[in-house]
Image (tube, rainbow, N blue to C red):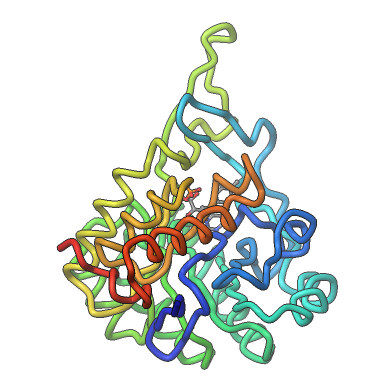
Length: 301
Ligand SMILES: Cc1cc2nc3c(=O)[nH]c(=O)nc-3n(C[C@H](O)[C@H](O)[C@H](O)COP(=O)(O)O)c2cc1C
C-alpha cells in the first residue's frame, strides 16, 4: 500500500502530521509513540527570543474540546537549536518548524536562522498571532502586512514554506492569491478559534486575556468546511486540521481534498492518537481495496 503524499516538492511518507504546540519540540512525545512512523511532526511555535507566554490558567476543558491561552510560550530559536535539534537529527520523519514574530522583521530573523539547518524540512508561518506594530491585529487579517511578511520570509529561506491559516482570514480569495504569489508552497488550516469562557462563581473571565483558542472535536465540522472551501480556491496542497480524533475524522479531511491531516488536541488526551489514526486509515484503504492513499484525496467535491 502506498501511503505517501506529495505536497508539491515535499513528499511525506504518509499523511499524518502532529500539529504545532501539541507535541512540544518533538522529544516530549518519544515515550508515547514512534515519531518515525508519522508523516511529519511540527515543532512548537518558535520566536526570535524566549517568550514567557500568558499567566495561568492556560487550559480549560469544554464538553467537546479545549480552550488554550498558552500565549505562544517558547524557549526561542537559539535554545531550540542547542537543546532540541540533536534529538530531531536522530529522526527520519519530516520536521516542520512553526514560527511566529511580533513584527515582520522577527519572523524574517527566525526564518533566516532556521534556513541554515539541514534537518528542518519546512517552515510553517503562524499567521494568527498579534502584530505589535499594528496594535495587535493578527498578521493574517492585514493584507498589506501579510504581503510584506510573506515576501520577506520567502527571500530569507529556501525551505518549503507553509502558511497556517485560521478563522481570522477576512477575504479568502485575496489572501490565498497573495500567499500563492508570495511563494508559499502549502497551506495548513485551521488554527484554534477565538472563544470565551466565564467563571460564574468568581463572576469573571477564566483567562487573564479574556479570550482563548478553542480546539478539539468541537471545531471539527467548522474546520472541515474551511478545508473544503479552501481546496476549492487554491492549487496549493492543503494540510487539514481541527478536531481530528479518529481515522474517520482524518478520512473526511482527505476526501474533501486535504493532502495531509494534523493531529493536535487529540494527542493531549491520548498521546499516541496519531498512530491510531494512521492505522485506521490503512485499515480503511485495505477494506476498500485501495492501494494508494492519494486516490481518495479530493474524491468528495
Ligand atoms: C495547547 C495548544 C498549543 C498550540 N500552539 C500552537 C502554536 O504554537 N502555533 C500554532 O500555529 N498553532 C498552535 N496550536 C494550534 C494547533 O496546532 C491546531 O492548529 C489547533 O489546535 C486545531 O487542531 P486540533 O483541534 O486537532 O487541536 C496550539 C493548540 C493547542 C491546543
